[in-house]
Each structure stands twice: as structure tokens, then as C-alpha cells.
Length: 446
Image 1 (cartoon, helix red, strand yellow):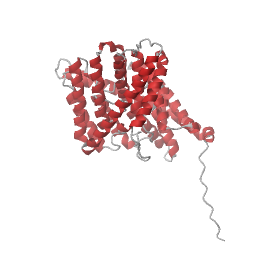
Image 2: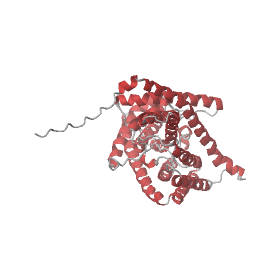
Image 3: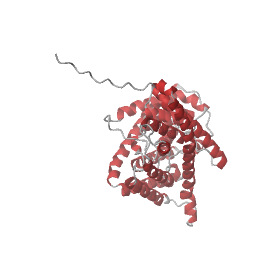
Image 4: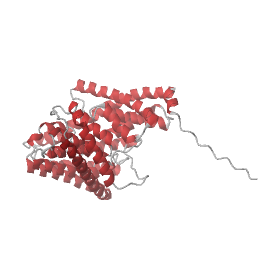
């Protein structure tokens, strides 16, 4: 009788607890702590540079050229130049300027060192010249790439697992204070990664350590330089009322509305992206002019600043909520329309993160709906942020946390409403989004 060949046994996966107790893991924690210091300092420097260049480009430069104030047409040359720089970087430099933002956040390994200059230049041009994207995506990529590159410099034969975990720790450190709390950044990366169980702890522990040290570095540098921490924060939140039955009904409306708007933004951005990819440089310049035109049209129609439409909206959320009563229903409607379309154009061609524009569009929509009977300002504001974040990011947990922790103690009051609106938005968005093939995910870490 023929003897049956024994099938090769599969190698069992490593035991997470064994790894956790090993000396190499302790070394990993030490390295994460050490790498968190320079990475968070570099992230702070990047945000400080952006914060200095934005008013320089939009306010100081026209004055230096002899204009009395900023001319209404000033965003046109600003965003044309920004589009040129981003288009050239994406087309010619390694790494294509980093993650293409229409795909949202997806788990990916850190970029290689040769890609970092392109990511830096494309992000700086996007954020400085006024495109509607945020710094969180580039910071995650830059932090991960710097940390993984530092480990490779110290040890040539570093295992892939350690390199990936150090890259994750670098990403944690880079956005440690950006969302207002190291925990929010940790939850964002945790939900993006899709890890669970004990393997999550292996990645999360060094990441949290790097994020905690990064937050201390941000606070220390902010205090030493007087520049602040660049953390997302609201300083004058109105009193929130106890949720009513009517507001739970409005939570359903907000959730469905955000899902529809988010689906429209994604559909238009993906459609524009196919045209941009054919002629990268001129198309990016044209879409930069589109963003500028939307900002100018909004400003001339409402008397409000064009910066309501330009930029990510990260620093604009606080004054927007504080002065929300100064915006008429018509101005809010036009703001949602123009900011949403500018967001589409920026997603399709520029390089940056999708979080803060989604939050701002959602906040504007929520404040708009708060003019109808039965919905308070704080509830509308919070639900709008949560629902639009869920629609654009596909991350329900971080969407709830962003909307509620941002409001401090008032966020706890409206949290049940936010949860309902986020769940509705997330489910409806899943229904509206076409199923993707299993191998079609595009990396998002670079």
C-alpha cells in the first residue's frame, strides 16, 4: 500500500503573552519611549511651521506687497501655487506625496525614508496654501516613517514585526496632542488598525507610552515657545440641555443627512480623482482654483471671511461655535455647500487628512439644523460632528469620542444623541458605499 505523505504542520502564531514577558518587548518599550521624544518634537515643529506660514501667506504677504488688507481674489494665486507644488510633488517624488485621502484611513505600514520628503512637501503645500484637508494623515505617516527609519539606523537586521510596531509608536507620538488628548489619537489608530484581543495590547502599550511622552513634549515645547500645543479644543461651550424625545428624532435625521452628504462628497471626490490622475499637475492647479473660487464666492455673498471655507477647519471650530449666532440660515447653508465642495476638490487632488474638514462640515450642518424647533445648539453641533465623521471616516468609535470629548462635560450630556446619530450615519453610509474587493484597499500610512 502506498504510504500517505504527512502534510506539513502549520507554524502556530506566536503567543502574545510570551512576547509581552520577553526581554525583547521590554527593549521595544524603551525604544518607543526614546523615539517618542524626537518624533513628537518633529511633529510639533511641523505644526508650528504650518501655523506660522498660514497667516504669513494669507495676511502678511499681501500687506508686504502694498495691498491694504487681503484682496478678495487673493486665494486664487495662493491655491494655484499650492496646487502646482502638490502636483509636482505627487507626480515626480517617491511615495506620491503620501496617502491619497479619498480612501479614508486604512491600516498600512510606515513609509520608507525616501518617501518622507515628498510627504512633507505635499502636506506643507496643502496645509499652508489653503486646501481643505488636515494635518493628521501626514503626521501619522511622518511619525511612523521617522520612528521606523530610526530603528533601522540603529539596527540593520531589525525584524519586520518590531519595525512595524515602532512605526505605530511613532504615529501615536506624532498625533499625541492633535485631537485634544493622547487617548483620542490612540483610539483613532486602534480603530483604523482593526486589531483586537491580546495582539492589540502588544501594539497599544508601546504606542500609548510614546503618545504619553509625546503629549508631555508638546506641552513642554508649547510652554517654552509660547506657541501652545496645537491641540483641538473648545473654550466656550454653551450649557447643554438634557436630551428630549424630539432630539432623539432629530438624531435620526442628522445621521441620515450626514450619510447622504458624505456619500455625495466621496462620490464626487473619487470621480474627480480619476481625471486628476490623467494630468496630475494642471488638474491639481485647476482644483486649487476651484477651492479658491468657492471661498471667494462664499465671502462675497455672506460678508464672512474666506478662511471659513479655506483650510481644514481645525482652529476655526472654536470661534465658529462661539459666534454661531452671527451666522444666518442662508450663510450656514452656503458654508456647508462651499466647504463641502472645497473638501471634495481637495480630497481628489491634494494631500492631507480627512478628519477636521469632516468635523467642520458636520458642525456647520448641525448648527444649521439647530435653527429648527426641537433641536438645541450644542446637540446639533455635537451630532453633526459625530455623524459626518462616521460618514467620512467609517470609524464609529472615534466619531463618538471626537464629538463628545471635544465638548468636555457638556459632551457627556449629549452623548446618547451623538451615539444614535453616529450609528445611523455609519449604517446608512455602509448601505450607500459599494462593496470593495478584498484586495483593493489602498495603503494609508504613506
